[in-house]
Image (cartoon, rainbow over all chains, first blue to last red; front, side, top):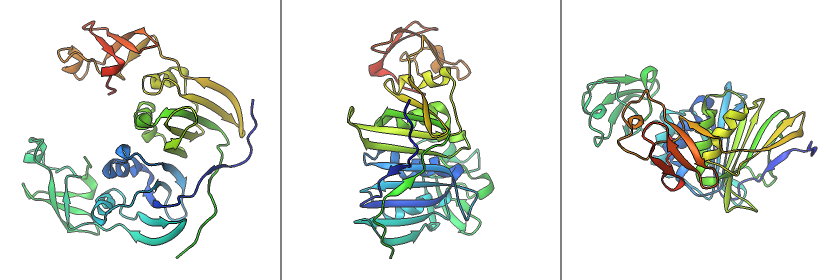
Length: 154
Length: 154
């Protein structure tokens, strides 16, 4: 049997994106929203890690991938306090926070069971964000309000 | 802007399970099969990492979690060559390989679109494994053969 008391190491990212301060229960939602299962670049994830500012957190590190603003803002519903570090040549060249967008397309489910988006699979959900602080969404089709409490991501 | 040229470190697991040599394209299937999204223990994942024996691989490290044989063998359909290290007090106390089970319940979809398991959501799929090397499954209900080529995990 091997004895291995030294720390395992994960190389720092030379170029890429680190997404930190993801709520632990939402890590896999963020992975799904960003489509990371279809990206063929080296990446590491941590979950249920100790955090100084929140109970437990998730973190994502992806080599050679830089997201567009609109893609990053898509994760805001799942991880509104996520922080991004953009890494170039081992150096943090940019720090960003996600922002709840004005409009949410194709990420959240409408709370109204009779809404057309819950029947017609080719009709993508679409909401106006009427309260960014409390995350309150108004459906473009049925005008019903979906609040953070009953928000389900697709 | 910070400069950080040293390696990022992930602590070695004191007690827990390391699952290595997962095919990169199947990491998230293995996570789903093991239900890791519902386990509240510190864990790290790596994907699309360089491997000496396969093109690109995934790896999972989970603290404080030890799986039963029958749970581990459930991942065999997605990751037949996965290797497990059981860690206790920073020491590898056991090495195991996954084994294709004799019977597969509730993991794979039957290839036959007319099979009852594709219509009745409360009927769990169930197969006898008739060829472990090539992963060939015979449906308990319709007796149709699902081969590795057309195997879809649920």
